[in-house]
Length: 326
Ligand SMILES: C[S@@+](CC[C@H](N)C(=O)[O-])C[C@H]1O[C@@H](n2cnc3c(N)ncnc32)[C@H](O)[C@@H]1O
Image (cartoon, rainbow, N blue to C red; front, side, top):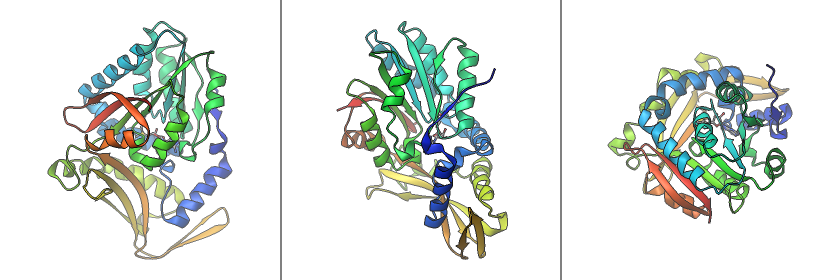
């Protein structure tokens, strides 16, 4: 059956091309480009399947299920609008829907992502498992902080309560900007389930060191290189390095970063603009923020969220937080 996806204006080709040019000028590629094309979406799925704790640790899925049950239990009979922000392959969303169907009230689901291929993947998963599900898939750049309220209202029944799922997004965004956007997106009664990659110890600790190989492996490198390749770099032009650096003095927030060092002068052409890269320059390709389990609740609090319940994996490498606007 054909599938209809809605494209938000933040995903119109001129917007995407402009971001690409800005990223090349600033030597900092927008994170969404890593997922955008169908080929990049496939590379990410391959990497995610092999390395994401949600795919490799059954205990984590059980934790997600508990958080979904808690969010659903907080509802009081209103129609439910579940909005997945950055749905990826839709595994967690399918799990949410399975629990939400037991809720009994009307359910509508809006999977959103910057990658049309991943929104499609999610929809195929949802429709394959729940053929009667009412859904409105949206391709959107959330980093552009679009005002989605009226679009969401058009999709849902009157008086619907919104539950936003935002899983694995805070690591790849400017986290303060993302949280301030989410704070604006949420209405006072809406619920937010947000998950983050955690770090059992601060920057530099042995626990933190153990995380690095999750981002420095052949599948991750193929994912990073796929983007560089699509922009016109040759393998011989660049050397990728994955490293960690602190974002806060006490090391409780730190970042894993993949940078490409230019090995020889190279000129790229994009939309009639020329980009000259000189030997020795560095291009930021990817980052993932890590928070210790003590730092993240404070970050959420500072951003204007009240955390109701928290679920943290025994390994302390992932946490899920059920929040409302404070
Ligand atoms: C680490 S994955 C998490 C996927 C899924 N939520 C999960 O937990 O498995 C991050 C997701 O965010 C999406 N994404 C990245 N930047 C985005 C942006 N600017 N706007 C919307 N989605 C974005 C990616 O396409 C990807 O699906």
